Image (cartoon, chains in turn cyan, orange):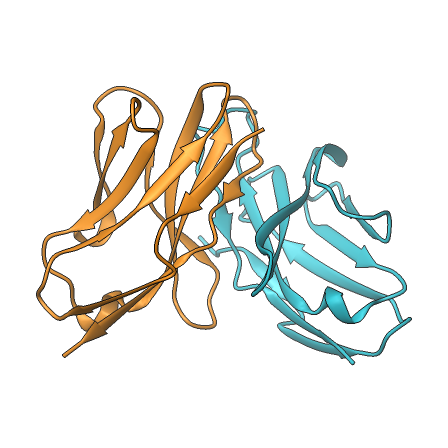
Length: 115
Length: 113
């Protein structure tokens, strides 16, 4: 079974631009979560999508948004990029039955550099 | 709200020596506990998890962890480490019934030959 894939793996943008990151979950998984990893703040939860609906949201500004498609693939978008948005963005998928007994499987991440 | 404290940011050990990575958590509700490992330039991989039952949890690659409710701890141990265990280790908690993981700051494990 293929794992979680994220594209692109690396991205360089300039301040003020916007960016879209993509995540394809493991086949059959319906829940997709996004995390931001930075040296200063560590790993922080952005949001979770299940069946095309945002089910949970972290404490990030509205510039960070996401969506999920009917095939469970998910995208996250960051508008008006700031230098502090430079980070590794990780996507995780799980079956999505709503219990935490299920394991979350992480992708390799997209490394975003904002100049 | 939940929070996680990993008491050591870096732990250097010699190959074949035992290691313990410490994790304390805070929560007003029952939680699930996890340890993840991140190898360089990779995503996170689940090592083990505590949901309920026996407080000693065994995971992959020879790791184990013990849940101590009175001390709100979930320390990770391995009796004999290998060079290949060099990585960053993250302790995480989740409120029961939620997918959101709250992570500690991570512990970088360095194995010296």
